[in-house]
Every structure is written in structure tokens, then in C-alpha cells.
Image (tube, rainbow, N blue to C red):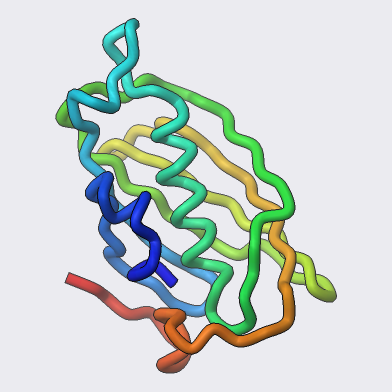
Length: 138
């Protein structure tokens, strides 16, 4: 799924690791991502977290976001390397809950919660279709 995500890839987002219900992604804040206050625009932080959420919940059947929210905890600046770690909290029926923490080093920048909905079909190009367990992508 990530290979077909032009928006995320063009922003320089990289998949660091993924596995059953988890994903770790990395993004460097560029000059074009900074708002008029000199800090990273919240939309880019949301996009990073949302992409990690999508990677964590698309291990088999096609799954989409049913809703999401984010709390911004600290500002990010140009040049900051941000890491988003997504974890499945629970799945019930065709729905699921996922938490994503966005960090700069050890400092939390944002906390995101996503609600997923499985559509039912299997996507052959999902990165997790090759089996269970954590994988690292360099």
C-alpha cells in the first residue's frame, strides 16, 4: 500500500519497520513544511501519523480510516527528524483502534488516535502480506 502512496513518499516519509498491527515511519521537517510561526504545520504532523496508522492497519483486507484525532504536544522545527510509531490497540468486527506517537528523539511531539474500518477485500501489494512479525525496511 505504501508504495502506491505518492503523497507520503513525495514528502520524504520512509517506512522504518512494520509488522502485524504496527508500523514505524520517519520524516524530516523541510522548509516547505513550516508555517508562518516558524514551526511545522500541524497538517504535516497529522499526515505522518495518519500514514503510520494506515501502514499498521493494512496487513490484509483493505482498511480505511473511519475517523482520527490528534493532540499536538510540542512544536517541531525545520530539520527535525520525526518518528511515528503506530500500534493496534484493539480490533472488533470490522473496526479497530490504533494509537500513534510522533516523537523527535525522546520528546513527544503529538499523539494520534485512529479508528479503522475494514472493507473486506485483500490488497495484494500490502507490505504485511508477506507474513507476520516485525520487518525492517532500509
